Image (cartoon, rainbow, N blue to C red; front, side, top):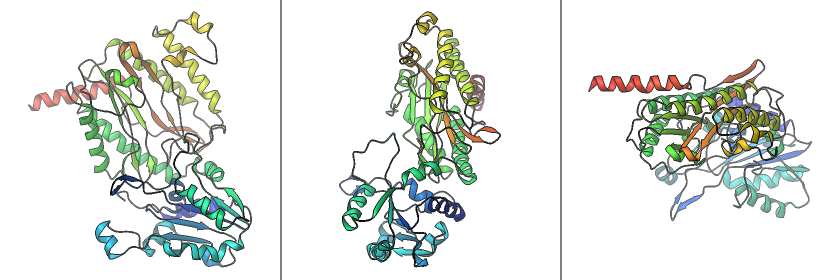
Length: 438
């Protein structure tokens, strides 16, 4: 891992919060993610199962966690199974956790090599009445691949058909959405790295640069500051490309007079930032571009005020829609008389603002959380309105990451340039300095 170590007390507290919610005499088992094949003899870069990481801090493949708080043998109330390393593995793949390193990282005393998993499990599982198992229950995910958790469930139920089975995911959905101080700090670190990458980009962009060159500047700054890399595939969308919401080609040349829509964020210690900005290629917005930009900025600021504990998800999005509707009328994109007659189930603003305003953020970019639970203290949410005008080849999106506290909300990206004039000032002051140096 590139990132600095995290205090094991964080993971101990997470395990305690989880086991406190288990039924009596229950055992819970968590698996690492699969290693997915990329080509004939290569795998994709490994990404840890966020639930396993949340409970252990272990960032390594072929890892299994057993939690059995009522186990008659106290040695096996918490057991972490690791892939045993060897001289050959060390030569070909590099360093893997030793037992002592895993103990220090996770706070788990009982570390066992993975080849002893089934023997160990069979010694203790018959003393449990209920088995908690985990699957990906993120409601943005549609299951099509038989990943490790699913295969393990099938195997376990064949071996132990008479146990009672429960889902771990509902417990984790409640726990993971409320961020601790440690998680807030890690997310802030990811946001700070993202800030520095954006400022680097502001000093780099000019007519004639390619989108992929900008992408290279971003990843340079991320890796330089010990981020794992991108939190998600970055969007560097110049001109009309900004109207493609998930544009990832990043292969066009940025033209004088166009606006570039950025959507990128750093991943640090498995926690994610998620930022959107829109900047003029030549360092100056046209009047129309700035009017649209400021309309989006106004919606963003008003929406952010509603990101407080107790806010209801659907009501929040409906209110943001009304604010956006008003801005679109001012821009001449909607007619107020048409709006008055619209079908409220299909609001007209959706033509220009077709996505949601916010999502939860954490170990997943679209973090694991309930759509039906009011916002809580400790939630981190994005705030990302946008206006996309196909006929003008213009798309503007702005996005910051907001932490809800008891005193209100805290913008974790408050120090990232946002006002149109500030962006223009940075771009032009750097351009002038460059000209003088030449």
